[in-house]
Amino acid sequence: MYKYIIHGQKKLKGEVVISGSKNASLPIMAASLLTKEEVILQNIPDLMDIQTMRQLLEMLGKKTVFENNTLSIKEIDPSLYEAPYDIVRKMRASIAVMGPLLARKGQAKISFPGGCAIGPRPIDIHLRGMKALGTDLLIEHGYIWAQAKELTGKQMDLMGNFGPSVLATENVMMAATLAKGITIIEGAAREPEISDLADCLISMGAKIKGSGTSIIEIEGVKELGGTSHTIIPDRIETGTFMAAAGTTGGEILLKKVNILHMEEVIEGFSKAGVEIEILSQDSLVARGKNIRPVEIETHPYPFFPTDLQAQLMALVSISDGTSVISEKIFPDRFMHAAELNRMGADIKVDGATALIKGVKNLSGAAVMASDLRAGAGLVVGALAARGKSEILRIYHIDRGYEKLDEKLRKIGADIERVPQ
Ligand code: EPZ
Image 1 (spheres, rainbow, N blue to C red):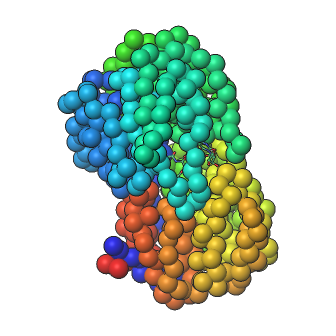
Image 2: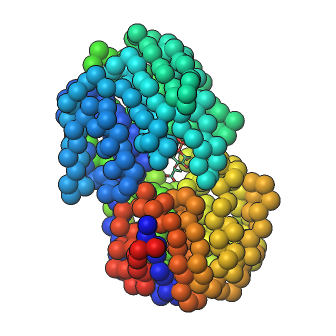
Image 3: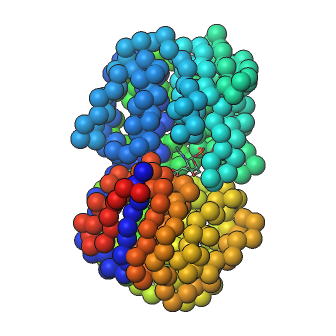
């Protein structure tokens, strides 16, 4: 187990190259199960969730080789179809192998994903979609046993109580690529990661229209071939560095970003007082100016993302007024608030809304990461805090950020990774 030691109040200055998107990489890796041919993926970030998904693919009969952010996935044994508890409990995105397994092998045995720090994380929408395509489901002993002699295309609505589901849209879209006939998904999620998956599937021979909108049409084909695909940049990592520029009053040149995916994020952080200068479609400069209070709600794409809520909260905790942040996706996603209060923030959580009364300074303290983005929020806070902070359980951060401490040290942060 490792922890971060951070001495705050260093102005960050320099350039950071943004890594490939974790949330695009994971479903696209799962999509390799749809073909027996080799799939080569470039710009894959080197982080823990990628290693976990590699382990899972190897348990499902694939051989993977990963070097210099390029991943090659080849088929060794097409007969395997079980995703065990030990892997699924570590990473909920494992559920994304269900669609490909059902489409290619007609069966899947997947441990029922548990909850995590940000909420119960149900999969009812996934199961609704698979049933609509003709899958028989049995849930017993903590596993989902799914069987489908043949998947048949259907019109369905995947909207849930909290809006569309990213992974459920991806799961059903992948299953539908090899189903008989046409599938129409209404209430589809519109995240850029879904469009990246669709582009990859199309390069494998799938017939998909409408990805990135709330209605996606998939015409099933007989089989899919191999491909070579480059993963889009990570918009959440990009936003995390915007917040870090804000809390340290620094100036960071962010490279290999995709501005088109960042409209509402740029809007949100600009409102909070981070000056964002767009240099080109794939580069921008983020400068910390005087941080201002904001009123923001998280919503499905294209609005402000829940995955940047903790980082924004850390930023506005040192503004000169009171901010209101409402979580419309994961109402319990506020574990980081109490930890920021340990650093001297003044945050009150009331249900799915947090009231953040800005304070002059945060003070360094020992705090604990509870999930990936909460951990990132605590790093953003610690970079601003006076004195020394310790951030424990940074395995959460390692799951979703590639070399975060290295990238921060390169632009002047005093951050060290030491055994806990
Ligand atoms: C994806 O998770 C992301 N993960 C999450 O990022 C992200 O926070 C989330 O989308 C929302 O944008 C990956 O892409 C690997 P959802 P996902 O299904 O697909 C409810 C990170 O930090 N829901 O879009 O699991 C759900 O409870 C991670 O990188 C159901 O009710 O999220 C939530 O309230 C954390 N039934 C809402 O929908 C279902 O069957 C949106 O969840 C599925 C979801």
